[in-house]
Length: 341
Image 1 (cartoon, rainbow, N blue to C red):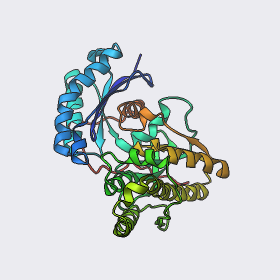
Image 2: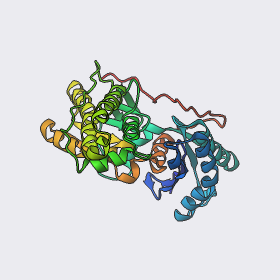
Image 3: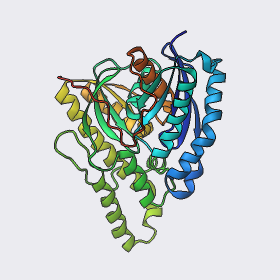
């Protein structure tokens, strides 16, 4: 039963561990941090402290549920970046210690590459080559995926990520953190055509989401001059209109990438991929464009260790190991390959 790998994810505010054996994920243990809700966002110092408290019981539970001892492991993997420095250090230090004590290989994993490979945890799998829209609180990218470890960034955001635009928009509306899921929730009862927010279209396949937040802010400022209770009176409609504009910007670039590459096999990954309006819009667009769209299970959309484990499996069989002194990198670049397509 080899390779047996322990994977650790600690890039932000989720402490997670997973065991994978022969490419099959056996479990996915996640400890979510609730301490940040009072601060309107993740507090890095508090996050790293929570990771220190959670990592031992989370890893212990993963090993016990898989009925595997540390001595049975063939490798240990961790998220190298991007993410919060203090949080990344907790996971990396723990993994490094296990690797050194047990004399087993150490594997570093890029967080967003892991999100893409979450599609291979369960069937059906995307067929290579495919385009993957990676959307989270910190990233918005269109990735050309040729193979498990052969990928290239075709376009990305030049400022805010779409998840950040959701959360900051929610904050402007007075909604608690995390606000993105609340916008999706309230939108279901709203009129998406209530406000026609302008969308930003850059040349090429890059995104920009800073302008739409400003549009929302100025729109609400002007309306509240006329009606102090405007937000409360029209919250559902505002959320639906704002969400529609954000999703429209994603689909415009995804359609462009599909036409330029000729690829109709698509996938989405990352925390924002749970958004119901995005999924419904993609389903509708896929009928028009003849796309085959893949969605990860909800449990693999947000940060988790199963996706790290799956990436580590492919890196293990390709002998992609790290030295013990490998550094974490909060701004780790996406591991691109030279691809002529």
